[in-house]
Length: 395
Image 1 (spheres, helix red, strand yellow):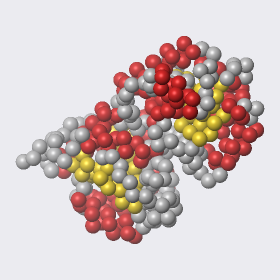
Image 2 (tube, rainbow, N blue to C red; image 1 turned 60 degrees about the vertical axis):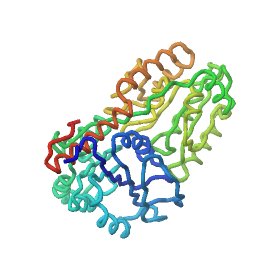
Image 3 (spheres, rainbow, N blue to C red; image 1 turned 90 degrees about the horizontal axis):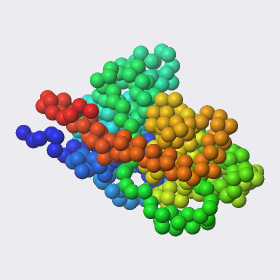
Image 4 (cartoon, rainbow, N blue to C red; image 1 turned 135 degrees about the vertical axis):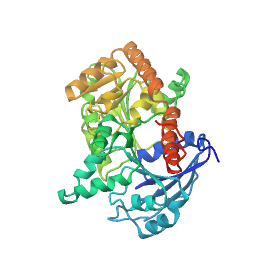
């Protein structure tokens, strides 16, 4: 009999969007897949639809990406070709892992179970099971609770989402697995100088960085609107905003906000960067005004690079990994944001000490290699239960 702790497992991940469209969850899987591959877990991806022309390009440690409903935008139902493909191919996988509740009809969950697969569901933003059920008409909610039983294990990335899942499924079928980052070395000073020169920043500039999708939920406009107050009387303070547009017209609204700002020349708005390392290296702190997150992976990426973070306080999310006034600051109002950012602008020593504390916190809790092992344990435990071997390690 083969050893299921070391045998190869095939896992199919199902997304609504993936590359070339921007999706933070998809980019995160690309990083996670590298570590899963080292544990003999092979990753395939099926994508419901795409807004963009698909250009074939290999993605490290993801074997195949299959797209359906090309150019369909946001279909009201799954493309027929995807249903047919899934019904005939799901049996090839030990695990089907759904992301961000791509299938609220539970059709694909049912097909996966009938095909002999174990089903994993990730909740990553506002899609905890209880919240998903509440989105349906009251008449259908009892049925939805029963359909949730098709899920073998539901994974939440924050305590808030985990609590939501526990309201629907028992603790034995729920997991809290936070997101993680690849742990490396902070950029040396010579890299910092070169990276700052890329945007024309001088040695005396204090650079505030935001990185993420450009949309109303992220509230990037808040950072622009408050920059003049943050910079007033404190010399050269720059704001670097990097990320793709996620909502039509949102970038135009940001350009208008910059044009109205008395600090327009100190605000730089740039598009998506596949490798944001130069931006992190150029920055002195990371600022984040998002009103709703499942986790906020860019925050721990910034912390790992020894940047102090100033984040909107999202209960059960950002307060679970940012220790206020130690590894960063949590704010609720514009006045609080202005106050704490100004305190960091004028105190370079405080920025350095807080950044080092932030990095230490990430190294101890959010190493992606360790996080990947927890996913691997979930997969292997489910397969072992399926085959009655009792193997695997309970996460």
